Image (tube, rainbow, N blue to C red; front, side):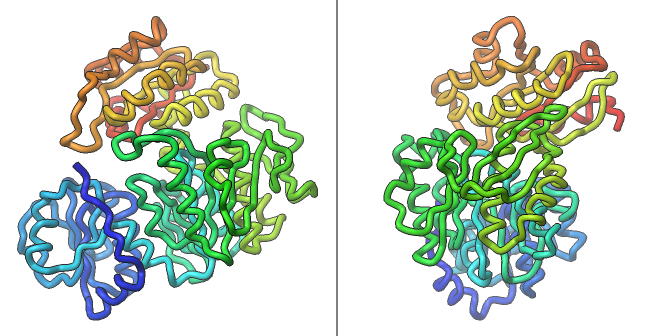
Length: 469
């Protein structure tokens, strides 16, 4: 069971931290938590943290002089005036419980992020059931390339930022707005970007109506002087914003009445090239270096947000055309027997389908997909969508379902083996990652593409493959 978000709000958190000199982060190894720990450290606080095991992110924090612990001794909270925690921890986490007993204020990650962002003039929150990290990264690159020096908090690492965050000026704050457990309702966007809405996180959301209501509330957080930037190709997005009272800026590929549209679309080596029009007038030309039609929509969202923040059309076109992608978003990892190998974080059927369709346009002889489903609840709820999500792949190799929360139960007895059997002959289930590695080593060759997908620990597979970079 996850630990609920707090909803103190920025003003109350400001009062809580008025005399605080040191803040402790429980679950500091997460990509968002590590970013917040760094930003807090830069702002002059003493920072410490705990996580279950070392990682590249915790090691980077340690190199900055932040003490990181991997064991649960209550005395490690001594001297800290507040605790920030990720909702992924259990309510009986010993440090979380001890902080309560000691009277140390406990603030959830999302609530704390809302407090942090209030100092910035333009607060651009990128939301959606998928595509958030890629679009946030696109925006970060475009703003950085234009010299706008944004502060960025993303869910994906970028080489040019040296991580998932960038501490810049106080005019632009670009952040990924996660909907899980309604975390994004603790944020204060002046611009709310909504990429798409569909069913996900069935362990929290019980219906699409509940999800649409949450996104409507997120858009409403922009207030009377802000705006929502919305994908009007998406019927659920249109429904969610039916009663939105603020400034509404729309984008779309099929909805030609949208404010920002793509025209003259063609694919060069599977990568889209197109013109962006703003209310019917030419804005800029874009030649993406990342594949997939879904990245046209991401580009339109980025262009609309950047344009609204004063980035010039020339800089928007240049920024989008030089964006090289983010870590674990169709990231090229190397070659195996001459086959190109990519790493991707996709774990929702729509993400899987979009990635594989984009890869299939790139002229490979065969497309291989290694997939690790993420959580029993998502796999069970979206099972039929997963069955058809792999249509563009020639071979699919399934690993066991990754349980993101240790106490997650599997009441329906859903499994990767069941999913493989439903798809048929081109799919196989493997109980051990070493068996998947052996299958790849023996059967892929030059002309093939392999994409290894999932939000769990499927990355362990790379250590078993003799990749040539």
